[in-house]
Amino acid sequence: MNRYMQYMYSYPHKTAYGFLENINLNNYFYHLEGEGHSLYLHLPFCESKCGYCDLFSVTGLNETKIDNYIETVINQLKQYKQFLPQSTIFQDFIIGGGTPLLLTDKQLLRIFEAVKEYMPLSKECKIIIETAPNQTTQAKIALLQKMGVTRVSLGIQSFHDMELKQLQRNHCKEQALQAATILSDANFECVNFDFIYGIPNQTEESFIDSLKQAIAFSPDEIYLYPLYIKHGVKLLKSSQKNDVDSENTYRLYQCGSAYLKENGYIQCSMRCFLKKTQNNQDRWERPFTECGFKSTLSLGCGGRTYLGRLHICTPYKITRCAALKELDSYIQTKDHMMVHHGILLSDDELKRRYVIKHLMIIPGISKSAYKKAFASDLLVDFPIINEWIKAGWIDESNDCICLTEIGLGLSDYIGPKLISEEIAEKMLEWERVNG
Image 1: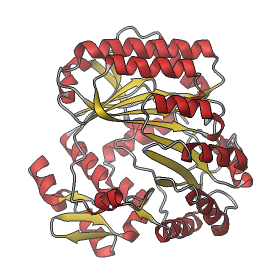
Image 2: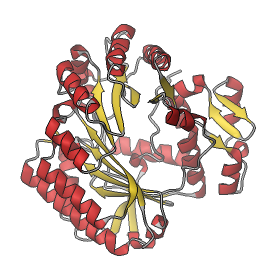
Image 3: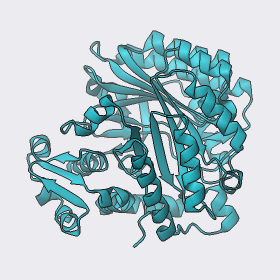
Image 4: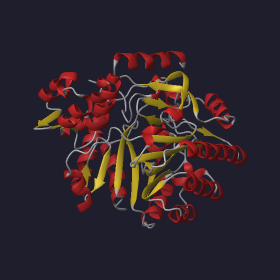
């Protein structure tokens, strides 16, 4: 069994999106009424492209090009502000990429100031940003503190130079250690470190050594990601294969997750480990919380907007040439309310999205909440869950359906089994067209 079929961080995958006609966001902005929504900004700029990266990002753009992109984002902000419901409040503002801190201080300030001017952020808004070791400087971190950033995620991936070289990362161990030190001294509300396992020639000893060095900094969160070599990435081009050594990768997962749990971290998904504090213990023990219906509004080129049934994004591209073409198209856009690429979800797809979003994290799915949302029975709609209960991958306890410890480690096998045939075919068609 290949335990590593696909990372289900959202559903459906953007490769299932297609051309849309006569879609005006003004007809869907009512989904943003009230509190609790997310605002996302995609900054698709990197110093270099990692060997495994299949995200929408480009390298080698000059400051003027990035300035033009920022001005387009600000025009988008102004248009969105005109049509947002008066009651809209965003509970978090997330900046992803790319490598957001690749931007100059002036460019970052321009973005933060524009978002705070035009978007209704809550007083307790969580402001979240990603960074990489080479871009994590004292000056940049001081700027983030000044702008009220609450969570910073650092992509370390490994503290071993040979493994970083295998991944085609553009930093070394010493740069990662320096960045980790700067972040740990900065007193953010939350600092996260990312690591990858399943790297060619990576051993249990080297993986645990990276984690040992990480927990010496006492980060609030540690995320562990299995290595995927997907369509169009540089590692695939160099190796001409995308096979994952499932058994070895799974062994690394088992030893890594056990090590973190033995050293003061709580596991709340296959990837996420939280430092054990009273607040996080409360979060772990907290009863089911609905997370399926709040909306996300995205800015820039490459991020996804979720408004009820409507999911939209600029066409997903991996190659530099294709991504640059989409960037140019975005910068030339005058009317950001009219959209032409995305998907409208059926009732069945909404159910699948709901199940995937809740099942992959602790504490799982409430059967009564599902019934209230869809007027149907979870185990009737998804009989495969009964098979997973019998297999010991899912625990059924009164109202709750939750992945067991074994099930958590199989998330990248279980999640893809919930993809509909229609969505799977759309994803395959994208592969054929973009192959």
